[in-house]
Image (cartoon, rainbow, N blue to C red; front, side, top):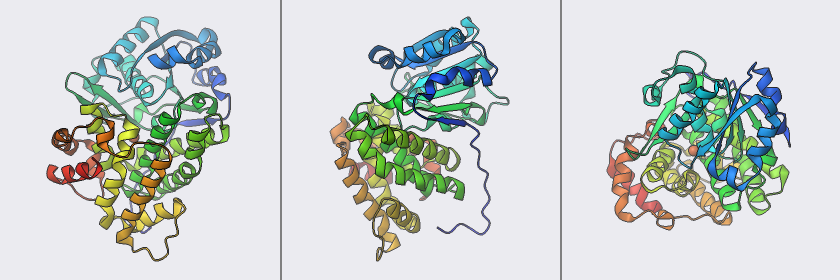
Amino acid sequence: MPYDAGLNFFFWSPTKVVFGENTALDVAIEVENLKCKRVLLVTDKDLIKDTVIPERIKKALGNLCVGVFSEVEPDSGIHIVNQGAKLGMKLGADCIVSVGGGSAIDTAKGMAILLREGGKLQDYMGFQILTRPQTPHIVIPTTAGTGSEATYVAVIKDHQEGRKLLFGDYNILPNVAILDPKMTEGLPPRLTAATGMDAMCHAIEALHSLQREPIADGLALHAIRLIKEFLPKAVENGKDMTARGQMLIAANMAGAAFSNAQVGMVHALAHSVGAIFGVHHGLANSILLPACLRYNADACGEIYLDVLSDLGANIEGIQPDKAGNVVAGKIMDFTKKLGLPQRLRDVGVPEGGLKECSELALSDGAIVYNPKFISDSAEVLKVYKQAW
Ligand SMILES: [Fe+2]
């Protein structure tokens, strides 16, 4: 893939990664390495209700754990972050261990800010507002997709305004990510597939981003190879620890890639159907990806040829400007085999709601990194209609 002669970039990925079966049970070592003594465990409602995972982590933390905050919901909101931070302050917490998917991790990032800075979360919205490291944060993901353990971004919903707010700051990058395949063992097949496709979108969007660069590209391309091989296996047999482990690694690599290169229109469009119609983030991305690949095809030929070869396709004879269409077809075959819905109409989005989504998508921060400049909501609407 060619880069401009004047290529200029920096790459930032300081999060320590610990990988292996049952490594989550050694979380106390990581807390001690950070010189912390009072941990607030942050997890989501369902995880604490349906699994023993939070309890096992609490036990592993022993006396280091001073409290558990388990009010996190899917698409966690500002009010939840405030509630959690209040508890953390009351308990004098000096460290957060988050256990869960993207929502729990992003809630914990918001709490890490408020525990150190005080004030209102909205005061820190936007990019690079913070001036010092925030409350130490260790992440134990229970899904393999968001890659949030490796990113400097938190997406937190303002439920009153009905939109997702973006917090991007190097000071909220987690200190440690513990990737333990045992933690994703119980994730049901559909969620495994949907979150895995989120990681696929992170990798492809990092590659076609206007801010793409070679280190992120390397991570993204290998992530695609891993997802192609191991996501179907993890969906078919959740107890396949090799597949679970490789998916955690893929999600982490794709996370580090897009934390540096950014994502584009797939995420902008997915954020909007998520905010307005509550469509699961990974599912929305998975459905929208093919239509966005077709839209970007004429601007990303060489890049999509690389994606195709990582997806195991024979690229001989494929014209670069056609590669986007071929990748789109491959992705649809892949998600069909994973048993995922392929149309927005199948996930509760009414056709009449697409116009509102296209207007919101145009104001999403991710759209500015899309390889093709988009300034007209009518163009976005066409893409939505194709995916509907
Ligand atoms: Fe995502």
